[in-house]
Image (cartoon, rainbow, N blue to C red; front, side, top):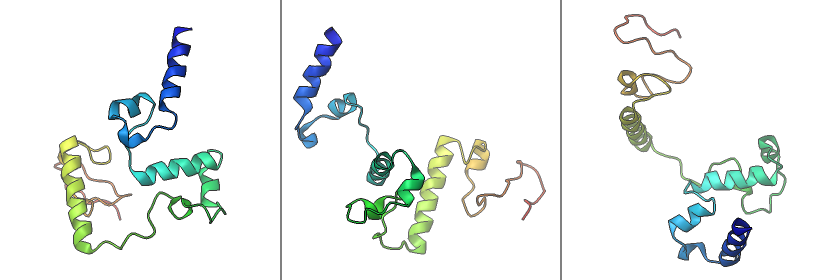
Length: 134
């Protein structure tokens, strides 16, 4: 009974509140977490489509303001230059090295860039002289 009263009280005090005036702790207590906006939009679309990513892809509600973003990408974003792509790849390389992982490989391998170890190719063990299969 006590928890039911608490839940009702919390619900009543949050209905209609402006999230900009709420603390991060309040938002997290309601089950919300910080995440990228495109991810939040994608999740909303999946929920709307009955939890079916395939239905999101086939969505015909083109009047919906989320429709262009339903695949989790911004179709209006400007194409990134090669310099911007290289900078982003370097940031990810450093982040992965700091975490100690690169697609599940050990820390020593984590310092390799995506150009040295593209998806779908095996990375030879450290000290190995064999070349990866093409």
